Length: 125
Image (cartoon, rainbow, N blue to C red; front, side, top):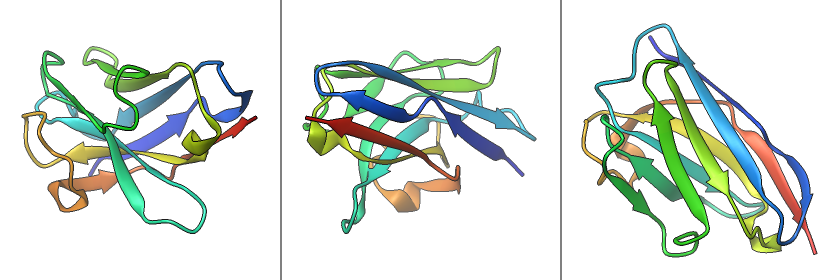
């Protein structure tokens, strides 16, 4: 079993930054890719970013490319999402998830087997 707990969400003005963290416990996640998804009000949950097990390879949704950076610290069993130049359309609940595989091309929900409870990010204009 793996437990994932997100933190770092909050209310921020457009143009500012936030860093989300996802701490894993129970079993190491160092052999698996990790991802972030988000769900805006009234919309389906969508892929945001993924990082390979080594941290060397990443994948981003077009909507966040160039503004968000995903990274991981396997020694701390933690994944991060640095979000810069935030926009009101980034408002959503952000979920951390553990992929079933090690590579960083997992952008579909079925490729993940453990999920956190989510953290709210609200960007005001």
